[in-house]
Amino acid sequence: MFPTNLLKQGKGIFRSIHTNAFRKAQFKDGGQHATFNDMPIPQGCWHEANARCQTRYMTILLSGIGALVGSVAFVAQSGLLVLNYTVPDYPYEDEE
Image (tube, one colour):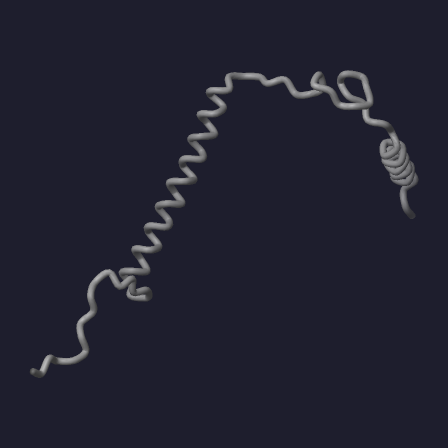
């Protein structure tokens, strides 16, 4: 048999979903529309947060550049890709 307490909990869940879907929005300011008073208040030093973000972005940039240089060098050394940076030998002999 199915426990009855789970059925009661399930009905409560569905009831709360149903009533919350049709409830009007409530903002911190108390109105029904968002205002500037409802926006989050910045906390902490912006310079430290920006420095952390820039450090992360610079690490990602440098690792991407390193991966690009490494892959091009590997392909060029393996002979799979010829970049034509030297003049090729002529396939014939001069007979004059």
